[in-house]
Length: 604
Image (tube, rainbow, N blue to C red; front, side):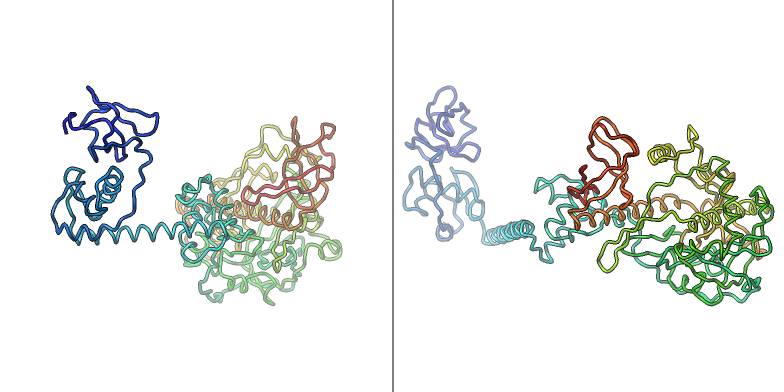
């Protein structure tokens, strides 16, 4: 439109907004808001009404039913003035703006102010349906956010919140819902959000799912034990010593005729290489011990069949060891046996070691001393078990019992003996190894043990025998828990194949079989560690007045690292400057942050 068509006071359209022409020159000056003028070209604006109007910002579009005007036009085009007359019976700056807003909605009309076209009935109905759907979606969205605010979720809300749960479980790294709510998109923030809105229970433990471990129990048929020759050792007393409540006893100890025997559940007799049970166990890597319960590597029926002491007579793979006066293993026997097992708890056994198994005690003490002379690391920091018993969090510090140490030494001895046996007979197996730290120490104080532990590198699996520094052994394999650990089961499968005269897996096949086992075992350990910490924090959350003793094991200028033996918990705390390493202090809990896995304490 020519600049001559515009005059001061005219109402024009500029970028979908109303404006008033205030001056016409080389360019046209318009006012969009009071005291806000802008110079534009004539092609940048469209005339709505010649005016006069003083202030466009005060224009308010009046609601109007356009259906009748649309019908009267009967498919014909019209000007904005004509449409205004049909809609309002008048054409003023106010009705011109209201009429244009009706056109701009784009449902019944299209085009510009100079020529307005009517749209077809089909086009109108399609757009109206889209508008209705959009309104419904917006209403649902508002209800959704209101339900989140009030923690009154329905099934549809829970379905939508699954994307936030994916972030909380680390299967994605973003959430549109949290973004819309301006909440930080992290697993911890998502965790707190899901608790706040009622999607998760406030004590929900997400950590096993977050590290992607299998939480379903294995459900496979258990085969019948093959009828085969076994050495009958039922005349020898055998003791399976475990923690109270243990459900999977897979090792026992005997001493007979100068030989220490470690009997292990003969799992390979029912779980041969590449069987369905073997593949299931391989995918899991180990039992998962959570405070909520145990997720088994193998079906429970297999434990019931093979667990030592669960039947009157138990099948076992027994490792006999002759130990000389210097605690060196001088002779090793590996044989399939039948044994009769008596089960004991560590606490019960501790009071009867000299009575029940004096020879075992003597041999294990000598073996422990030998390992110490090889710089075995004795790091005795507080440990504990965490269990959920009928909804109650039960934390039990692990007592440093002589019976527990004795069993540990016997199992290590068996691991060293089997490693040597396999070397002597060219049986490929996985070995557990650990390099020595930069500086070898013999820590005595808790702070020294804490610092020394930090120097250690993680143990690793190797197909070649190497030293395990932390245990003080020149070679070692894990072989005493085949019901619970896949690497132990693999060793048993190789031993059984050797004893039965069957083909052994070579190192290449063994490497393929054990591929990803370290990673899966690491996931199991993380799930257990995070879950134990989670339920310890829940315990503190339920007991907000908790007070107890802590030991300072490290410190800097402002904070100290403490260990709380009663909770087997390590954390930081602000302390006074006069505290020293290994001081025992009194602390109380001041707060808990479950998503961040943190408890806050204060010195008393």
